[in-house]
Image (cartoon, rainbow over all chains, first blue to last red; front, side, top):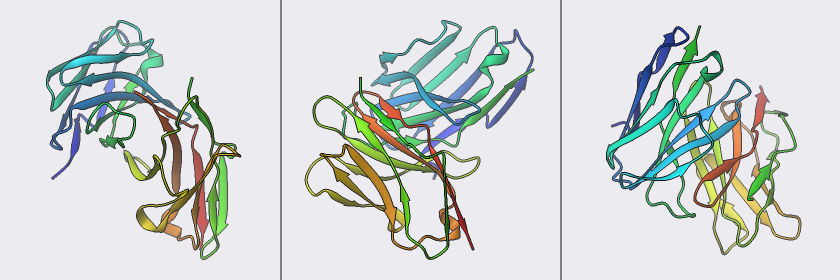
Length: 114
Length: 110
């Protein structure tokens, strides 16, 4: 059973389109995250939700909108895609939003904007 | 702000030799430090963490890390590297968010 699963694994789309990535975790965790990994493999947090409530919102363009329908799901919708949005997006979860818990990552969703 | 630095982009070792991947940290207060590994086209996997207590922390796949407060370091070590240890390794410091280092690519040659 996959602990943190993301779909789709690959997206190829044109500039200006809108796309969504879905994430689900079956670990019973309260906190979920979206991270962006750029072409140099640098990882940057985008958003975090704790029990459906937004707790971290880094300086991300408002074209990116996360949604957490319940604590097991965190989706990411991206409007008006730009070339610079091309990256691998990782969903992760942790048991609680404390400082001592490790993150469990999904396999990533590779977004290519043409 | 909390941060970690990984001073080496790449580490190359021969199989069977010791492996060290370096990490230094800058935090205010108690540091909560983590190591993760990323294999090609995969998500990150947790290896080990230091929260408090023993300075030598043991983790998955035979890895360990030593917390050194005076040197503000948390280096990852493995006594005898395997070819299968070739991957990208990230050090991270945690507050409400996890802040990752830039990553170190480890190549273990047969």
